[in-house]
Image (cartoon, rainbow, N blue to C red):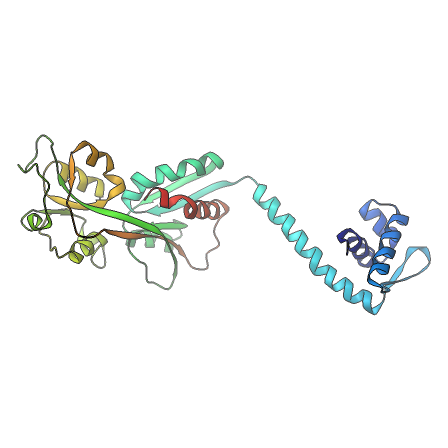
Length: 301
C-alpha cells in the first residue's frame, strides 16, 4: 500500500470532493482519481461512491479506511511539528542550582558545549547545599538541581546521574603549614588530626563527607566548619587539618604535591543526583540542558 495513494484518498474523503482535493494538494484531478482507483484495485475494495461534479460519498469500508487515515496522518503531522520544534532557536533563561564544588569544577566544563550550541540562553546558577537547592526548586527560582544528598520528599523527581569519587587529603609539601608532617598519613594518623568540614547547621542530617568518614571508622574532631568546599581545601593546604573532597577538585594539587591523599581500604564517594519539582513543565532550555547533562556529566566526575 503506497502512502501517497492513501494520502490522496484521505484528502478526497476529508474534503468530500476530488476537485477540492486537487486544489489542496496542487495535483491534477485526473491524477488523484487515478491514484485512488489504484488503491481500491490493490486492496480489492470500493472506498468511494463517485457523484457528478467530483463529489464523493464514503462506503462502509471507506469510512473504516478514513478513520485509520486520521490517526496515521495525525501522527505524521505530530512528527513534523516535533522536528520543527527542535529546529526552533533555543533562547531564554536557564536557572539551575548545584553544590558548590560542582559549580566551581564541573559546570564550567560541561556548560561550554551547551552554551556554544545555544548562545541565546541566559544562565542563572545558584550554588548551595542540597537543602537550599530544594528550596530554590520549590520556589521555582531554579528549574533543575544537581546535588549529592539523596532527596526523599515526594514533591521532587530524582534521577541518579553518576558517581563522584571522594578523597581524604591533608597538606603536602607547602610553605606556611601549621603541621610539620610531610609524609602521607594513614587513617590511624587522622584520629589525632583536626578535621576541616562543612557546617553541620546547613544540613538536616549528617552530610555525605561525614557519612563517608564514619563508614571507614573515623569520627572526626572538627576544628573549622565552612559552607564552601573550596575554602576547606585552601585551609587544608595551609595545614589546618584534613578534609574529604571530590577527586575532581584536587587533581592538580595532588600532582603538585600541595595535597596528599590518605590511603584507605576501599573507594569512597557519592552519587550525584538530578532533582526537579514534580509536575513542573520545564522550559526548552531546561529540557535540552537536562538531556545534555545526562549525556556528558560522567566525563567530569
